[in-house]
Each structure stands twice: as C-alpha cells, then as structure tokens.
Length: 377
Image 1: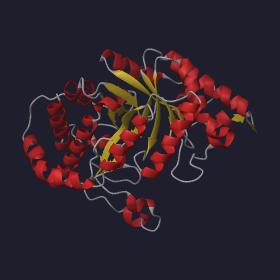
Image 2: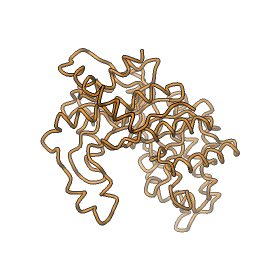
Image 3: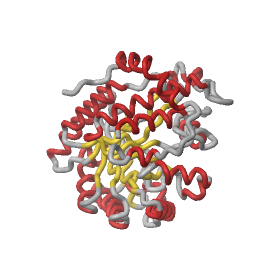
Image 4: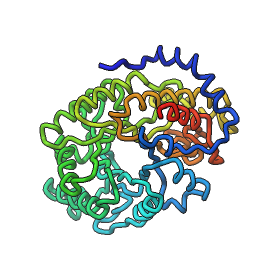
C-alpha cells in the first residue's frame, strides 16, 4: 500500500511550499500551455457549452485550443437535449463540438448516455403512449439510444460516460429513479453491455460525485464487484471533483484512487473545480437561509484567497501526478470564472472556482498547476 497524503502533512507542506508557489507566479507572463506541459504525464480536459462559437469569445476559444487535449460537452449530449421528443434527434450542437475538436486535434468525451437522476432523461422513455411502458420496451429504447449515439460517433468520440450517478450513500444504495424502479440494479450492467457492443473500441466510464467519501466509496466498490461478476466492468471510474476551498479531502481522494485501481479500473477526475465558499450550511435546511446570503467576492477575490486556492490546486496535481499510471485524465468543469456553474449552483453568487478569471486571464491556480507539471517532466 502506498503512503497517503494526510491533511496534517498537506498543511505542513503548504506552510513551507505555498509561498514559493505563489512567489514563483507573481508577474509571470511567459507563454505557458497546460496541454503541452501535461503531454506524456496526464491528459487535461475541459467541459464546454455548445455550440462553442456561440458561447465563447475568440480569446476564450484560443484558451480551449491551447490548454486542453480533451473536450466534454456540458449538456448537449444528454438525452433530454438531443431527443426531447421521441424519434426527433437534435445533434447539431454535438456535431459542432466534434467538428471543433477535430479541427484542433482534440479528443471528445461523450457525456452522458444514462444519467440516473430525475429530469436527466426524457419522461417518454418510460411511457407507451399514455400508459406506463413495460420493462422490455424501456430496455429497447435505451438500446436504441446507445446504439444511435455510439455508432454515429464511432471513431470520433474516444470515451463515454455510460452511467452517471447510480449509487447513494444511504439505503437502498441505488438512487431510486425510474431506472431502479423498473430494473433494480440490472440497469447499470445492462447499459455497459449495450455500450460495449455498440462501440467495442471506446473507453467506458462510470461517473459519480463524492466517490472519495468513505461510505460512498464503499458502495462504488460493491458496484464494481457486481459489474465484474456480470462481465460489465467499466474501464474507468470518474470522480467528480467539485471540492471546496480549505476542505479538499486529499487523504480520501488518494485512498479512493488506490482502492478503485485495485478493482481493475483507471480513475478520472471528471468535473474539477474548487468552490470559493463552503456549501455545508446550504445542505442543512435550518442554516440554508444563512448560507444563501454568502456572496463575499462580488467585486474581486482577495489575493490571499486566490493564493490558498492555488496551493490546493497544486497539491491536487501533485497527488494526480504521483498516481499518473492509475489515472486516465483530469477534466475541469469549465475554465473561466464567469461561466462556471458555481455562480448559480446551489445558490446564486459570484464565484472564482476555475483557472482563468472573468477576463480570461490566468490566475495563480493556473500557474501553480503549470509549476507542478513542469517539475513532473
């Protein structure tokens, strides 16, 4: 078993190295490409809104081209977006993204075939006219959906999030959506078997949030055991890295990477950002009214807060580089602060969670990551 990074060791190390990280970035203006620095170490990806030419400025498009080798669509490949009405496919935005990626020699990751959360799949999937559909009919609709997308984009999309967010931390351990009510646990291996048949060459991913939390990790490990028994083990498990400043669980992340890899999969960090505000009070209904008043950085984010964020991004990347042989990639959920989903979720506020500011200029976090990648060469 490899040594893990404890919170105590992290705080001790940043006390020594933090000043050096930021001092090294002060006034730094050289031309840096994260894509170039990460080559041969750890592929870097980014989630984008589509069509890209409608959502981003020329400067922002240049950043996507320059710094990332893999692109994930935020929404345009989710089932409700591409087939709101049964049989009426709308793939223009997905085609636009693939054309952009091909022109810039970037890979595309498909997100996501089966999102196991209410409203993330069309209601008609579980209906036969005005009646509830049989399990056989729902299975047929899922197969058609997976076949249509994966065969259309075979050779153009290198990997797919096949199932998103199947398990919970509490009983009955599977999220109780229409999928679970119709098929029980079987909907997960069923989807992976369909995906493997549709495109045998694509990487297949199980993607979930809070995978690093011990109780959730336990459930994901059990899921992997079940999938292996049913010849449906994914190639990769994605950890959605939506973490919070000063509360990044480094030790748990490392333990999760090691435990998942022992099950025979690689690991991706799939939706990385670092929220500048704690969300804990929001999830408690008694303290939620207090939580939604938090909006301390409307004018600017103070330098000391950006420094702490940079240190924590750097520590994450030291961990990822340490385990690079176990990792498939790291994908950021956006790249500029102004377009981050954390400006509106789970409440509206001005956030500064990503690598570039609202003017698309690199932040200390950008240079901190670049320094880690440079040292890994």
